[in-house]
Length: 314
Image (cartoon, rainbow, N blue to C red; front, top):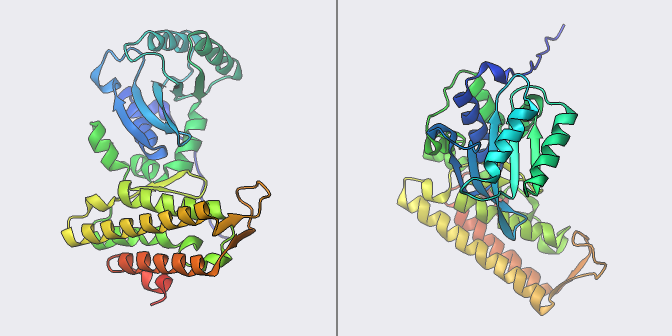
């Protein structure tokens, strides 16, 4: 008989308050792109704001997010309301979003009370996660962080060390470069442009690849962060950093040419209004130009990133 493995629920309440806050901080850093993310809980007298950050929101504005960690077996309304009151009058001002992360179970009635009280204190959006909901988020968005932590690897004590902890950092530069191969293993880099299925997806793939090379934030096509990998600035060898910088410049050239084609009308949608419609018109010269620019990107990246020769067609 084939053995099967069982996934047991995590007991967050076995963690100390500081350990729980560290885990929440590591998850947040892995889950979303932040302009800044600060851990106040480690300083004491946090006024209910264990973690506060400025997060990208919708691609056009940033939002302030305050996170309160409540690693209690059963969170009470008194505790939640008290934290909300302290946050609402804090020196940082009223946040755009409040997230309360509990270690234990949370009733639907308590969730409703938290949402109502947060709105009464002018906090427009609030979320209350139970322990099982936090575990689900961890498994979905920060599986490697979860495995390392619950396999006995001690989380660091400082925010900077925690940020480094959530990056998938291979032991060698070659292994780190190999992680970058997957950035280019997507249709936008090997499908002839006239066979593209979505203009929006093509542009999104270029933007995501540029972001991953520059910042180490690697997203899927829905914009969700899959992993944090070393950025081009993190590589120790100057020649590698320069080659990756040149690849980014060529990617920017490709994206600019794509935008110019849309502006001039040499690339145009069918007019149905669906941004993901697979039907579009493009002239032959524009196709050749975009395909040539894409080959330049892959040729430059293939100089240091293993495995790109096949994609580039060399």
